[in-house]
Image (tube, rainbow over all chains, first blue to last red; front, side, top):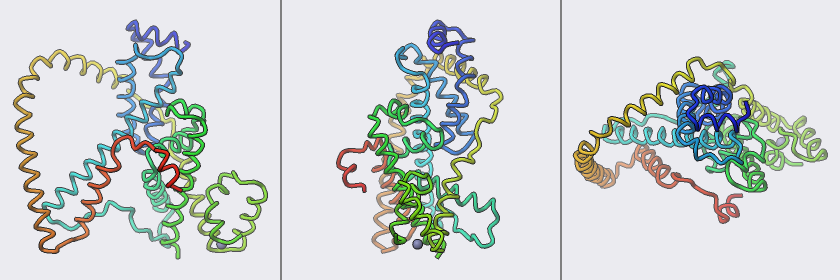
Length: 193
Length: 150
Ligand SMILES: [Zn+2]
């Protein structure tokens, strides 16, 4: 069924149409959330909330827009909010630590020992450093880079999702790459030589 | 091409985004320079993580969970009649706790500095605070940061 018709039916409280929409777009939404939060269970939880928001605000949807653009946008917002809350929890934990006067607990990247690390551990280390580096990008660079690299979203659609011009998206992704490169090189220089 | 120039372009080399001449110059350099080769391998493998992230598993009960959550929301909307009086009571209590916490925190922080006991964990805490308050919000990129960043 075409998206427009589907949305019209959902507005008219057609339950089956809503299920069809969820089935059609669940992997897009879940994968997008996962590419930001990197945890499959968290991603599913957030994705459920994305569809609930869609369900509750479907009557506000502008007909000329693409539903995928809307889905991406809500997925990004909810995922980044989730990360923000997670950071706040880390803050609360460090306040607890402060009061308990306990030794500091490392939340940094675990030190590498690549000589005797097996491939699995090496991949974990790579994941850690990659995600940390992406996390350190500016807000907009992070969104543009993640959508393009993890989800293969075109620059044009990213521009629509983020409400920016195409050239701004190009420049965001370019600068994201330069910044990532800096972080990765700094990290590996310290850990190789 | 020297090592520094190669480092500046490794990510673009990996993505094959440079012109043919630069691509081949870097390729040449990497073949001859052990440290750049190692660094390139590291970067290549790290960025390669993006492509091996698991995708498209099936998600059983995904729609059922959404349905449950919507039902829960609908039924809690009916119950909200009880809520206002409860929140009225809760607000001053929360405020009092926050103020007490603030004072306690302030005294503790003061003591820490006085005894010159500036440990690394304090630094972490302050860093976390800084992140929270300065990296929060929409962090829109202004023209200024556009010009300053690179
Ligand atoms: Zn070199």
